[in-house]
Length: 77
Image (cartoon, rainbow, N blue to C red; front, top):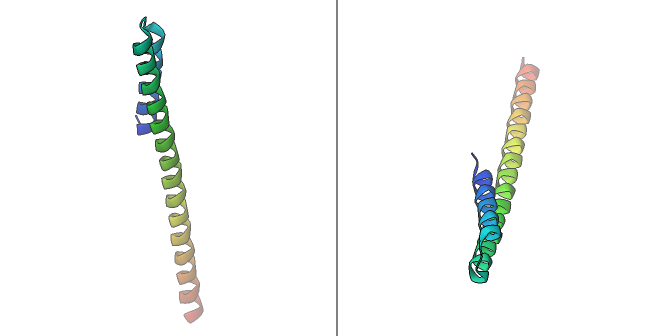
């Protein structure tokens, strides 16, 4: 389970708790908690996306450097 999934699950639990709440202050607290969990889930998703993009770019750069090194070695022979 990723952080995003964990946070999203907590947000869903908080929303369910808000629906079950009979007191207005409890409902409000649960809704605030849900909003906070949703914000954390969105941040985790952005971070995961950024890390994946960064890893792909790094792998692409390494592949390009490897191909360039191969070409240089081939030309030297």
